[in-house]
Amino acid sequence: MDKDHLFATKAIRMSDSPSTTPHHPSAVSDETLLQVIADFLSLGHADNIVAMVRQEPRYLAWAGRLVEDERYAVRLGMAVLFEELSALCPEHLVLAVPGLIEQLRHPLVQVRGEAASLLGTIATDEALAALPPLLRDPSPQVVEIVRDILDDSGNGSVFRP
Image (cartoon, rainbow, N blue to C red; front, side, top):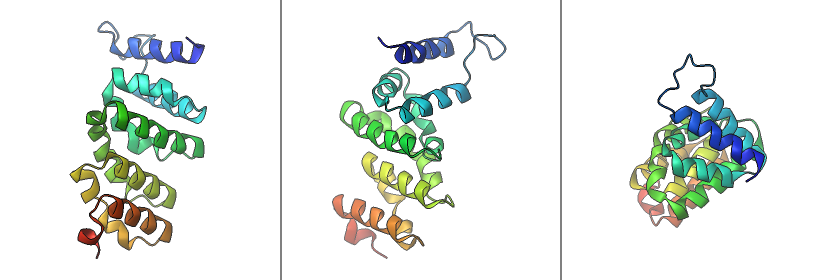
C-alpha cells in the first residue's frame, strides 16, 4: 500500500471514529477530506478515491464542489472516478446529483460543462431531467455536451426546446 493510500485510509478511519469530535486534535474535518480528495484526483489517484467512496458513499455529495476546482486534473479525475464508480457501484452515484444540479447555473462554463457531463454519466431520470435548460446555455460547448448526452440517452428529441 502506498503512502497516499495509507493517508486516505487513516483520514477515513479518523473521521468515522466515534471518539473523534470536532475539537479532538486528530479529527479530520470534511473540508480536509474534500481537499485530500481533490489533491489525490489532481495527482491521478482516482483509484484511491474509488476506495474511499466505496467505503463512505457520502463523499459523492461533494461532487458539485469538486467540479469547481480550478485544476483541470481534478475535473478530469472526477470524470475518471465517475466512470469507474458507474461500473462498480452505480447505486451510490445518485448522492452526487443534487450538488451537480446546483452547478448547472455556475457562472464558469467549465463548471457547467463538467457538471452536465457527470450528470450524463449518472444518467438517472433525475440527472437527465436537469439538463434540458442547458440546451439554451450561452456556451456552444455546454449546449453540445448536453445535446450529446440527451441524444445518447435516447431522450434527445424529447428534451429539445
